[in-house]
Amino acid sequence: MPISYQHDVLIIGGGAAGLSLALRVADQCKVAIITKGPSKDGSTYYAQGGMSAVLSSDDSFESHIQDTLKAGGSLSNKKTVEFAVEHGPENIRWMQELGVPFSSEIFKSGKRELHLTREGGHTHRRVVHAADATGKAMSDTLENHARQHDNITFFEHHISVDLITTEKQNYADATNTCIGAYVLNKQTNRIETFQARFVVLATGGASKVYLYTSNPDGSTGDGIAMAWRAGCSVSNMEFNQFHPTCLYHPEAKSFLITEAVRGEGGKLLLPDGKQFMHKFDERGELAPRDIVARAIDHEMKRLGAPCVYLDISHRSPAFIASHFPTIHERCLDFGIDITKEPIPVVPAAHYTCGGVNTDLNGKTDISNLYAIGETAHTGLHGSNRLASNSLLECMVFAQSTANDITEQISTSYQYKKISNWDESRVTDSDEDVVISHNWDELRRFMWDYVGIVRTNKRLERAMHRVSLLQHEIAEYYSNFRISSDLIELRNLTLVAELIIRSAMLRKESRGLHFSLDYPTADESTIARDTILKPQQKSITEKIKIIQ
Image (tube, rainbow, N blue to C red; front, side):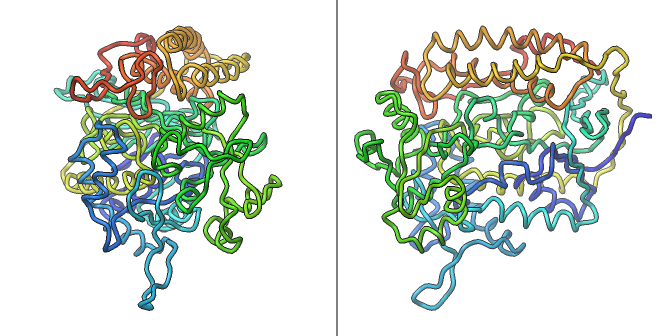
């Protein structure tokens, strides 16, 4: 017997964006939170640096706005930037009221205040943090409150397959409306139907499309892919941020070394111990991430070096242990004592700056469908995200989306009849090796051809390969019972196509998109977003989806 649920709000994703939105609406309605694994598997839990907000008397909204616009390479939407920056402090206060244990210090006046650190691209200290495990502190606190709320239900070990819309269900509504999602229960391997008045995509980014990433395994672009298949437009998918400093060690799985290490005086060194960042930018180690990542990539390729080094050992052991306890302990696990020696580091895919187009209230092109956090394109980041503006975006737009939903929740609603998922024409697969091989091939050619530095030829090669993969995946999807791995591969391959298509359309280098064929920014025209619309049918959209 097919299983079906009904809730007022369905939130797909359990990171900072999804959890904070759930808490803000739960007093007025019933909420379901879908997570692919334990809720702690999302990117928020692993965020180290912190959240940017103007809290110091010598800082200002205007300064934070200008820093964000400068990092964004003339593509950030000023109205969005102003909205996010101006709502930052109140969200910090809200989290303090919930009990998030942000780091603090006692000033000369004897008053205890939040400790603020500075990261690349910022002109002031404005990054609120909980030592070097800010995401964990926020995630734990938000989740603890959510689990205690009677109106919030967690569905862990569930992965969404596709959104359910009135158009897909052949309803003759004037407006295409999202009315739920088909979801795979990974424990029973059966599809369940979730109906909801409002659906919120908070699934994070798509950095797992690259071979090397700082993100957890679940960053497979699920929300972006599902929104595209449902009819949403996306923007700026070519702007993929590579974090300059991830731990280089065969067993470290690209463990992130927070930008705050450089903010507190860490120096980047070549294998011979010489500094090099001053040759690339006058701001040195505090230049924006795209500049630092390209500089490291350049030096590694020039020297044939497997990594460069980040040295904070000139600071006292007590300072390092108190400010970076997680990094200190993790590096010790691999035999590296950062109080005495530099850390081997390499760039790794870190953040998806583009995403599903939304307004300031998280609304997408489809009625009753919202997107927040890394899944969304709000216009905040432009062509390059300023450090620690990601958690800012999560919290601010979760707040505005929650306000928009609660304003509508009192109106009457009639749940529509939804077709059950049809598995009558598929069989169990005996060739799962196809999935693992395609997964590996995708991530390798994306790293080689659509990475930190791109060319027209590399992009053409990548597009050819992704087209072949999509044909294979479509055939597999049509004939065999779906699995979690197949869902993620299908989504990643679609997102890869969107990234490649966007990169091919941008005939310049700007922010995180650097092309050897167009090495400078096009200043002859106003910088414009790269917008893709589903009417521009891709291979994936031409394939009939089993329902």
